[in-house]
Structures are given as C-alpha cells and as structure tokens.
Image (cartoon, rainbow, N blue to C red; front, side, top):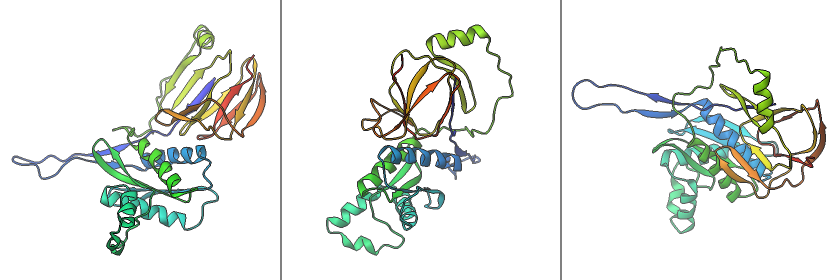
Length: 280
C-alpha cells in the first residue's frame, strides 16, 4: 500500500458588498501561509532536481511583506536577505526582477537609485488567475539562471492554488474496504481511498518503473509481496513536469539502491527521486 500526503493550498477571498450605487470595494485574492509553503516545497523540489548547492527561498505577499522563508543547507548567509529583496521587488512592481536587471545592463543605470530595490534575476510574481498575490525570490543556487529556474517552478505551483480549501479538515467517516476490493486493487493497481490530504494506493508491478519526484508528497510504501531494487536520491537528468508538483524521468543518476522484500517499509520524503528497478 502507498500513502501519499500533501500540503493543501488556500487562497482567501475577501468579499465586501456595497449598497446601492457603484461598488466602493473589490474582491481580492490573498496568499495564505499554507499556499506559501506549497510554493516553497515545489521550489525546494526543483532545487534538489537541479542539484543546486543551496537556495534561500522567500515568499512575500502582494505588498512585498514576508510570508515565509526557507534556506537550504549550504546556502551562503546573505542569500536570505537577497531572496527577500528579489521577492519584494517582483511583488511591488508586478514584474520579474530579470527585466530590471536587463534594463540596467542596457544602460538605464539611474534605476539603481530606487530605494528598497533588488534588480537581480530570481524574483518572480505569483499569480492566481489574473491577480498577483505575491512573489517568490530565490538566491544562493549555482547561478543566477538556476535561481530563476527554481523561482519559476515555485511560481508555476502558485497557479494551482485553489479557492476555499484550507487543508485542515479531515473526514470523520469510517472507511471500510473489503478483502475482495483490496485484492482487485492489487491485481491491477488502483487508488483504494482518498481522504483529505491522504491517499491509499494499491500498487502492482511486473516490470521496472520510471523515476518519480513528488515535490509535495511523502510516500510511505509497505511491501506486501515480491522483491525489487528500489533506488532513491541522486538526480533525474531528463525529469519533466507531467502535472503540478509531479516530475517523471527515465533514470536516476547517483542514487542509492536497496533490495526490498516482503515486509519492508520505505519512507520517501517529498522532493527525493525514487524508482523501482530489477522487478522480476
């Protein structure tokens, strides 16, 4: 069986109704802490996929105020403040910071006189629908271009944020799956139940799998029958995004291989590449 857990996302909708005549307020989406954490988790997953030597990842709201910050081990100390500056600049100008860096390189150096302004590549606005709800800033990866790629992955995750979902409520309904349903599930491989943020999946394999990276999900795998080699860690050179927060590739390079048998349990944290090989 396989349990997949993920952090749900939320965007808060503020609604105000005016009386007769023209409305004096508008609806506005806002980034929540849970939403910011999902964006950061996706960015961390991308940093690990790229084998980045470090990364400070900052999320700010649409006014440039800090919502969340994470710094990978090995990131230089100044990376945190630089990432906040990039995110703030992208948020209050509603443009990627690379645009300002390019403008300055092309001769408009007067822009450096702006206060509280970080015109360095790696800041991207976060949008939900047509609205800018904040921004992500990344600093401390292998290069400015890698900062940008990590930030872009986080910005892409923001587009999947859902309205009205807090991710905190769990169903109190008791779920019963009889033995025939379980046997049928394992015969072909299917999801047995989905409750809140959790999924129970019956997996059946008769051949080698592909390399997987779940940027939000933690896998808890319990081997019921059979044997296989299970490779974790390393990198996936040809990883492609198949859906938000899910990447797939043909192989893992530099990972650790274990022989797993009946009764073994494996916990794969979010963002760690993994793959079944040598399946009889």
